[in-house]
Length: 621
Image (cartoon, rainbow, N blue to C red; front, side, top):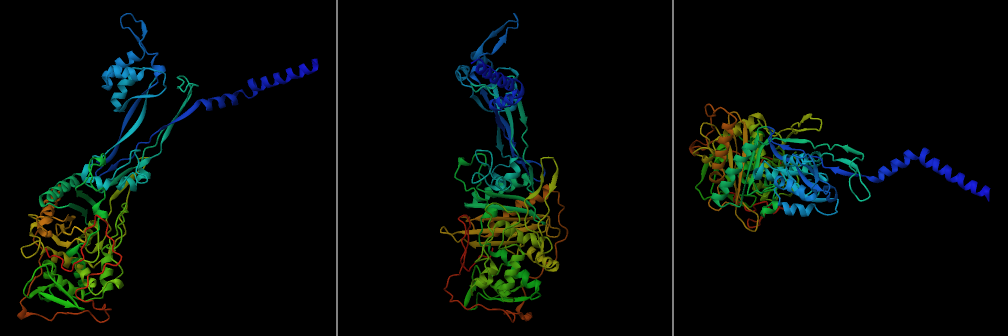
């Protein structure tokens, strides 16, 4: 019996030694782990900036103030006269906090009274207010960081900059625009604070704590000029209102494709998207439409580049013109006209453009359109961006083979259409549009974004000829005199096309660059279904003039010198020279289609925001 008791005692003694000496540290660590609990520290979302560093979207720190009701009950205050400390508890804390937080004292005292370890008493408090609260040294009062996203770029930049969801990120379907595209880089890496908690779920004041700081997100610097973007937005919004249009878009880029302004009206408040029922799409990147007569630049440019015509080649333009069994006409009836190639472009003749398109195979036209950036998405990679629809030239029927030449039976976005003019302004070199100037990483190192790969769309000589021809558009003889900017030579092209929607209507546009003799800015102005006027020259032209004038003045661009010599637009038929009137040998001519057969749009599925056109009578102006 004694031996048995001795054995039991020995076992207990050994276990006690193990617990107190050998495993004491391990057990203590296990206990601490059980008492410890991490609290996440949100990472500050990175800023989206304009080209000069001005914020377009930024996060600001706010705090939710939280109270431990048991701890705050121990709040004491020292009488300044007697130096005696008196416990004032929740009521005293409420009296001190109420004037700082702007909350009713009785309401605050009620919220702070009880046994709960975590009760929010104030939301979204600014840092200066929190510092005042912290200075009171009230026990049980803590804060939780709540980042708030602000958008100084406002409605003008909303569709481009985008927005975040209620969780402060743009993942999944909760965000849009650049916020969505660069969400991973902007999000950063959250930190954490590990504290020890008691059995009743309260922070142990003298317990161990460990903080892992959060890493903020990267800074994304765009190519956008915020001031110019605001001016452009105000201008297009006013014109939309004045003309009763459904919407308007302005795209401005430099001659190397850097986007300086991308704005639309109507727009929305990215910080309060529920305030109205606006469309949150970006029409400049997502709104494909039939561009109309702006496309004539490519048709004429291809003929010039292939050596099949010159700016002074003479063309007889009848009131109606039939080719491959298809009849074409201009926007209005007219007697037979006698236009040069320059005149065909300046006066926006559909028939003249069809004759130019007859000079080379359809495959060549498709090739040149692709060189100018049509039929594929830009290098921006904007969320939901449309590539437009061009289609394989083998699918172009007897009518669309020619209507495509003057801007119908295919679609493009405003950014793509503006890129056509960028190519001419840049001596025939097409550089896909870019929207990001660079990124600043978490170490503060700035990484500039290289320009996308460039393409020689047409020769330098062809671009120069087209530039001279396009100056005639902004003249008394052209279709866009109202796009003129005093003191500067302007090159540009109008476009007006019917909409392929149930509502009908038009898309009116003007795309141009200035100064024509030393291009600095390229701009496209697009109006969707203006009610009071439909012609691009008289609807979009004045907006171009106003905004381009502002841009030239803002950047201190010197006025133009002498006007570039313009080519003659018309000729005397009695002195006419022979002109090629048909396609060269080897063209795979399509089968004729009866005149009343509607144009085919194989595979064309325009988005709801995309005005398009399936008529064969694009307007001139």
